[in-house]
Image (cartoon, helix red, strand yellow):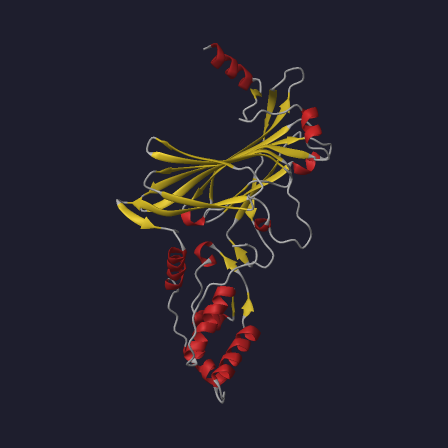
Length: 367
């Protein structure tokens, strides 16, 4: 009872004991451990819970970032942001600065962030994207303070989970990710770039669930040189995916391998809305008239699409995966890569050529 009363008094006074699970080193010790660094993460943690909701497999992800500020220029890290969208819905966001109380070791005054701004997350090369970003700034950032971000994301489709990276742009004292899933869920994972990093892994049963845990300590700040490849090529990370889950009493295949990945993308193609376009057939006939060989017909169609259809990218929900109908793209004269691919494929077929949609990888990922 006395402990509860003490905690209430501390909270009323705006004070709170350190809440991070990892021990926070004294400022001088941390500055010596990370020379030249303006800040370091005490904890970089993600806890995921797999849930069966109605007829879908969803994931609730809680992210906790605890940064200790070391240098006089650490205010550069006072700004933070959280991204959300159709496949990652922001449910809760809390942020605060922990200011050390003079003469009271391990005690902090809590200054909460109250001003959050949400706006569209625009990116170069993308005309419209439904991704949103919530931005905010921590108050009173100075050497010795800690800035803590705690937010929860719901992934309504478990197939679109993001990897967890063991590292950041500043040193990381402790990085950890856990996944708690029902026993009826078959989960798998792959580690990348972790050959020289001692990442611990445990798997244990807890009631009707299985808990997977990966952790690593004392990670150096990641460097990224100009014109270097994306961080997935060199930063240690774990990719996890759900192979199968029991939904409504029946086993449901998700991403167990290439066949399941093909099924997912084939379903995207099946969702293309029909759109008849006699004008498209007329255009193809006029383009290939007089072409002596199949190669010549294909060449004319390819360069016509390249020269007459403007690239405009859309990434709004499933529009990031499902192309528009070829006739609609032809009429509008614009579309993104998958729209132009679908138009080209249909035009080749109308010209009597065999043509198929296919997967094309991205150099942003090494796999």
